[in-house]
Image 1 (spheres, rainbow, N blue to C red):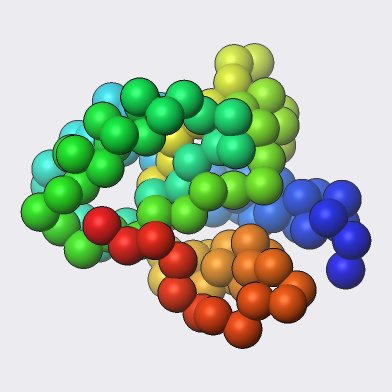
Image 2 (tube, rainbow, N blue to C red):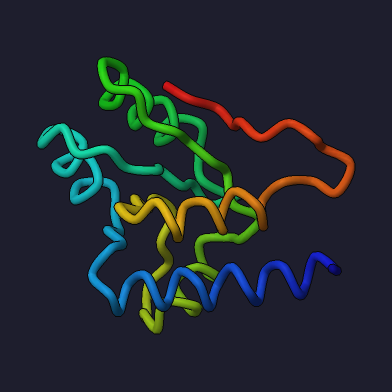
Length: 118
């Protein structure tokens, strides 16, 4: 599957998760979700700043949250979700969606199942 196909499927998957109420977007909303001790997969846009990533990792430091960098920019994520603004930080609360995101984000030659976990 090409990178463009993966990006399209990933965008569609995120849109479905949002419509199903299983996706939280935005730094502040995700940090609040983490504070509630919910088990979530944290996702970052490819062009998210290092400072924002560091702040998110700090917020998630005492929890065991998986963090994945998506192969989508903030603009692409915003468009996929039907929003007019860019989105760089997301949290997914559904394990089924999370498993598919893991699969789509994994490199073809990468046999490793795990991603960065805080």
